Length: 127
Image 1 (tube, helix red, strand yellow):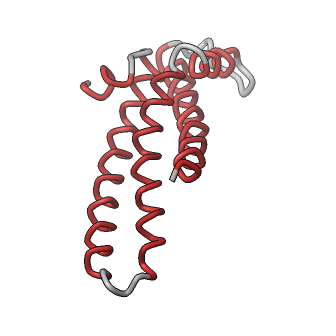
Image 2: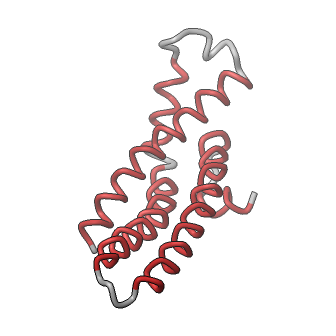
């Protein structure tokens, strides 16, 4: 289980770091177009450094929540070979899939707030 958790957590952290960096660059382009006027502007480096320093705890926390559900789903998929409890495994997979989709939806918008305004993960989720 811990191997699955570490794998999915690493994947989520990398993906969400890119998401927060992109939100920061788009926000800089929107609010201060002169700072993000070229392809290799200073806004990219600034947004990446904010994502990997100040906002990295928020990225790791939100990623851990999604990674935990993904690891549970991976274990549940391994149980599908057991023919005794097929209906229970399918119900659990459906519930975990719904929970994962809801969490990923809220994460997407929470990370936009983290990238734009520098909120913590919980404050961004509330907004």
